Amino acid sequence: MEPPSSPAQAGEAPVLLAELKPGRPHRLDWKSSCETWSVAFSPDAAWFAWSQGHCLVKLIPWPLDEPFFGTPRSFEAKSRKAEGRERGGPKEKTLDCGQMVWGLAFSPWPAAPGRKPWTRRPAASGAPGPLLATGLSDGHIKVWEVHAGRLLHNLSGHQDVVRDLSFAPNGSLILVSASRDKTLRIWDLDREGKQIQVLLGHLQWVYCCSVSPDCSMLCSAAGEKSALLWSMRSYTLIRRLEGHRSSVVSCDFSPDSALLVTASYDTDVIMWDPYTGERLRTLSHVAARPVADVGGEVHAGSLRSVCFSPEGLYLATVADDRFLRIWALERRDPIAFAPMTNGLCCTFFPHGGIVATGCIRTEGGKSTGGEKRRSTWWVRWVDVPPPPFSFEQGQKTHTPPS
Image (cartoon, rainbow, N blue to C red; front, side, top):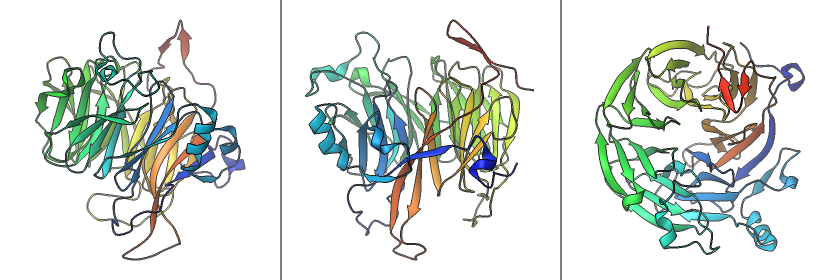
């Protein structure tokens, strides 16, 4: 399916709401450290975090002010700091992590009863809140108290880049980390960040990890043609999911844990039944425009990221052909496209309707060697047709994939 040539033709084309860029000049001697590898909304929808490059994470209170919406525009994040001070509300924060930031994950909020270790150091506002875990290039994980912007834990154990992080959604403060050292590690932040398990089984860098919403399973994706499913109770391997023809780079569970999707450099998203390992459907990406090969197994339509919408009705994918796609689960073709530059990751707003994407962007046109880059996140409102799903007392029933 080709992308529409114009918004009028699209009908359902996502609308660019805002674009963020760093509020300070980059140190250009670090030529490859300004990518936005990770973006995240807090589960309570009160904060947005983005790894803006050069060891920094920006924490922005949500929602953004109305002036930032309605027309596409860029704005310096630093301008929000003064506004927050004037309003007396939560203030924008910059976390200096000391190393390049690859992964971000917010803890669930509120946490499970009796599991609030950071209240020993109460936030300046007097109100506790979620934690933010940051995965770093030196193998460390720094965990921050969001409201105060205070470092709580500096976890060590990985021997290489911590590429992704995922909290158990039940509020237990169990954190899973995925690393280029080919391992996953399980941490208990309720026990001072104690490492409780190391999961071995991958032969290549681990790119992604995702804990199922019912906290029964963990999926991990590495530079391999299969994804691994683990038990979150025994921390043992359940099964390998085999079907991709190239490296699997991203994975996500549906909100009811009934479905799992994996995305690969082979340009396919595969939808699985995680309980049986059955392959339910394949969504194939047709390159919308030619892009330069970077060697190896990467192709023009290679996928970078996949995620479910919070109600489980849609998927968002980011591919190397410079398009964000929105998919309805019952269809095999995208229902919406949005152009983007060098996308790396995507995530839905917890209440739906908005997708944030992290990317690389070159300023000043083409350049060589010392190109000037900026990292950005795009927020887009997706207006999609009513879904073919039924809701009864808050429970959703999936239309079975054909």
